[in-house]
Image (tube, rainbow, N blue to C red; front, side):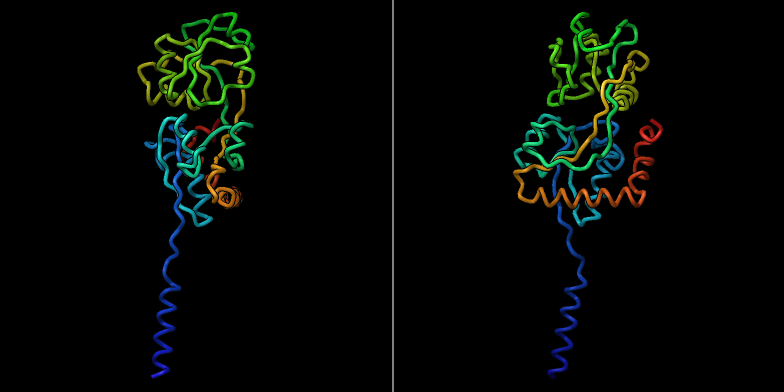
Amino acid sequence: MPAVKALLLFIASLFIYLQPIKAEVITLASSQYYPYYAADLPQQGAVSELIRQAFLLQGVQIHIEFMPFARALRDSQQANYVGLIAAWYSDERAEHFYYSQPLYANYMVFFKRRAQPIHFTDYKDLVRQRLRLGLVQGYLPLQGLMQHQPAHINVATDEQAFKMLALGRVDLVPADKLNGQYLIAEKLPEYLGQLEAISPALELRPLYLLLSKKDPRAEALMQRFNNGLEELRRSGQYQQILQQLLPEAVQH
């Protein structure tokens, strides 16, 4: 009998040991930033998938809730969500968030109406030509842009900014080049051929995952995420995700 009891205890402990470990699940906030991340993109976009797979390598699952950027930033800062997919760097934000290693870099340009002759060499031209800008609320302004105080209108989304540009309510929209090209082709096809990117390029801006410093798990989670991201790069899976979900970026 003692041997039977010992065997049963061994089988029970083995059964418990073999049970799958339940992954930790965290919820992140996100805006819709085409073609990089959005609710209706395959796998919710390449940047979402990079973050998802990097965390999975560390035993963490993510759930993403999509909303306008200003709300996503505010609610993440308050730790209503663990963090934010994704954002650019600023010293002010770094007071409230841990920043990941860079995920991808945005190539920032101005978009204008093709029929409107605009010559841009520096931000002083915006004021001299009395040009109006469409800016997404919550986005960081381009370096040096707001020092010249150009006329501008704030909107909630990139799509709204491009629609206002097409309708002549603003004259320029600063945006990532792929973001603008995607929105015009896929979301606003009625304006295809009417809007274009202009030179020179304004900035190259890295995107990061942000985790709220108000969440006690955030610092350790960020370390795990960075480890997972590095593993993605070493294995080649990082490049595979870009090739599958963001082929335009690979060719860019």
